[in-house]
Image (cartoon, rainbow, N blue to C red; front, side, top):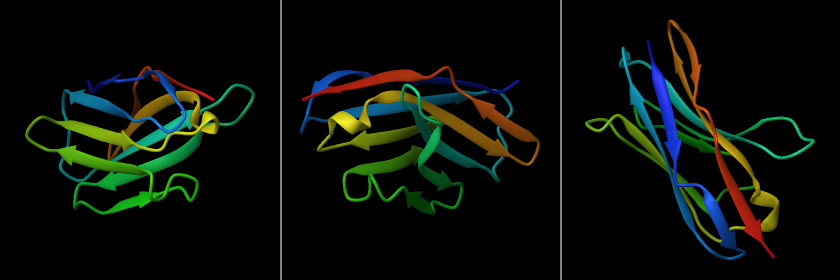
Amino acid sequence: QVQLVESGGGLVQAGGSLRLSCAASGSIFSNNVMGWYRQAPGKQRELVAFITSAGITNYADSVKGRFTISGDNAERTVYLQMNSLKPEDTAVYYCKLTTPRGDYWGQGTQVTVSS
């Protein structure tokens, strides 16, 4: 069974930075995609960024140039470095692992950006 555990959320002032981590355990296949999603109150969950097992990355337009996704295969951990945070980045952030056998979600971590 695959488990994902996020950490690194918190309260930060606008313009500040946070780094989220998502640690994966269990049977993880090499051909996968790890993504970060977020859901603000009253809004749908949206994709923030993803990274493939080949290292290809993609970002939502709203975070391009401010957020960076990276992965450490040895540690089975994916990171989301978030810089120049804005109040509109406030949300619960989730990591999602997409594999040939199915999708797995973490429990989420709260990010709150104060103005």
